[in-house]
Amino acid sequence: MSNSIAGSGCELLIPLSERKTLKEIERSIIKTYRKELWVRFVKGIKDYDLVQEGDKIALGISGGKDSLLMAKLFQELQRHGQIKFELEFIAMDPGFHNTNRERLIDHCNHLNIPVHIFESGIFGVVDRIANEYPCYMCARMRRGALYSKAQELGCNKLALGHHFDDVIETTMLNILYSGNFKTMMPKLKSTNFEGLELIRPMYHIREKDIKRFTQNNGLSPMNCGCVVAAKKTSSKRAEIKQLIANLKENFDDVDKCIFQAAHNVNLDCIVGWKEKGEKHSFTEIYNSEE
Image (cartoon, rainbow, N blue to C red; front, side):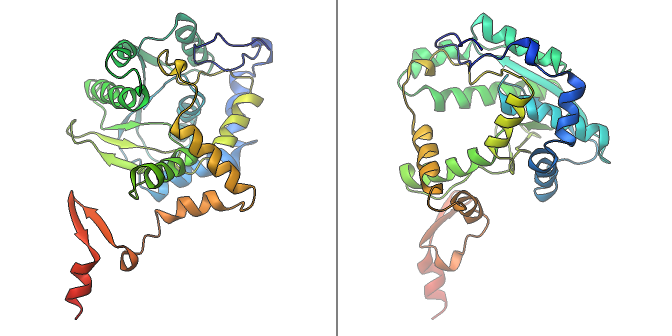
């Protein structure tokens, strides 16, 4: 293997000779990684009612491991599922290095993902206005650009490749750094793009299984490809990821417990909460029971 270009957002490159064929990759989703990927993908779709008959879904393809797998999972669902829906594969180029753009195109061609690539120049904007803390601003701007493109294509849903680990890391980030209990929701209605809904169909899929699928099939996807974040040496999310890994050494199910905590909130034991933007206190209920 050869090392990636420094700052390009790429991981170690796997020689093309080691890349599996399209047929082998698609078969591995249903056979080799059925329990880890396919079953959990379908579970997420059903648990949170993410796909309905007649949907036109835009899939945000970043060129990373998560979105490439999501695209293939949706193609399998379209091929084998009972619900009829349409797909649009959209990839925004926020200012990638040429090597990253070429890799995105190469992977989509090899995986038979008919992607629409459009320019945004977001990296340049973020570097100018939020150089010290680029990731939050970049994520917001990238999502807005994807929403806009999805709406332009007549889609009613935008699917992003966030997975189980993203969900629990977000939960812990909010608890430890923001002092609130919020998680990454499996679906959200857009407040700025009428008629559009954001869905996260990989909600139950573990990152380690995505990595195994990617590596064993000989794929070399990008990381975020950001030329701004590449200058940074650490991030709060990376710290949280390491914290959870450390906790798992003594308590193997700690990640599952973090995930389930957002599904098992007991309002009888919550001091304060916010609902539809309005703050509430346990005293409202406490005093009404006297």
